[in-house]
Length: 339
Image (tube, rainbow, N blue to C red; front, side, top):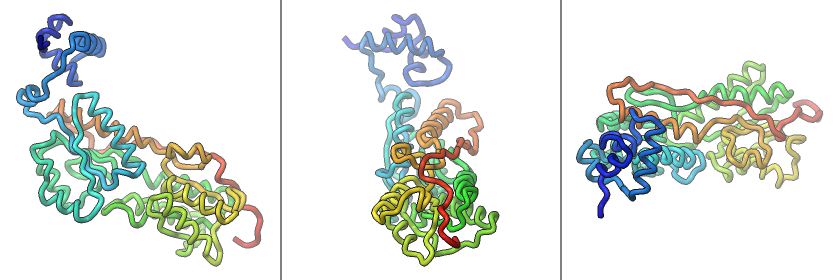
């Protein structure tokens, strides 16, 4: 016999509307009652009808997620955390991997998410035309990259402050030949490499250190790219005694290059990264920690809140905390003549 929402309500001693709100993760239900209803529904074997709920609410119970690189650690971690929040609230995820200019152009030309999703989480930074296209959907929009923009709720960090703490750490240790592995060839319109590069330049200027273009190399935000970039920096006429990598993955590639060149870290070269990747502690990497998974979860929660409270004013920008974590890859430079 098919179990209905009325059967669950009767067994739990609440109304059918309360059961509906509880099982869909909507507000207005205490955690105690929500847990009680979940237990009763599981015992009776009740499964909510997605089609019936959609007809009643006008929702698709699907969230569109746009990513430039689905296979990279940062984006994968954000998507995984967001999906867990969406799933717990009864929503499915429709993922669009827009890693090439062609697929990105096709997506924004056709907008296949129209009438298929209730909200959009964007992990890419749209240009003005793309942003206008997303706003035309008339659904809540959040992002975890870039700063605030009209129509979007942004969840992110202060990239400049994080970079400044990393580079100042190297300056305070006594380094004057400080290289940087950047991600200049990152996703289209991605501002993170620019923000972190400018902060690096600002700290050098603040410390009276002249910028040397030979100490900057593109690592493409990958381990392999970081290794190539570090090898390039080591080929400079006056190689760096310390390196700031704009991501932990590039920093790990740098560590591999240094090891292959029989150089010791941090005795020969200090290395600091950015992210606090799950493997950063394994290689004892000094890094700027950012709560990557928490950003995805918070962005998802904000989207759901906008769906449940459409008349409430959404926040324009939510800034997550960062902190410098000191491990074993940084130390004062060894005396070796002029630096």
